[in-house]
Length: 217
Image (tube, rainbow, N blue to C red):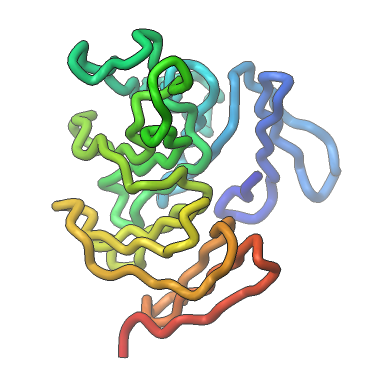
């Protein structure tokens, strides 16, 4: 679920393959879109909605003005040499994030790259990133864990991810190279937030704790 930038509409995606827009003042549903949905995000200008679901990893692009689909981002099929069972596909998005400068779309999903043949169902690459202007797939890789939480720093230079692996991963958004990793949780990471100045990071975990990290002085 998420709020529109004006705070007047709650947008929710459901397993019934709908995206609903609820007016928070009237409490009535103003619009319903038909789409498989496991993750949602809004661009910084508030004009565009992005949704992803169980459809081969495809992310749909919607106009929030018209309610019509205006595009999509579809990850490539795995290369033959990377296949084990032969039926692997890109994982469905668990979480989506758009950089504050509006240039990058990031997608975190399930990663079963550690599984043996016959068990794997995804391409083993749980992290994907697209250039929103060109539509080019910039990153398609594994972070070593399924990604349940994904945010971007206010300066749009670093992405921060967490999941079943218990570590908090910080990487350069352009190069994909590691910036740092934070350890200390005894469970998976399921919630992340960052202060407006990018100095303080908050993490929520399955170990029933919320930790506060100073990542910049």
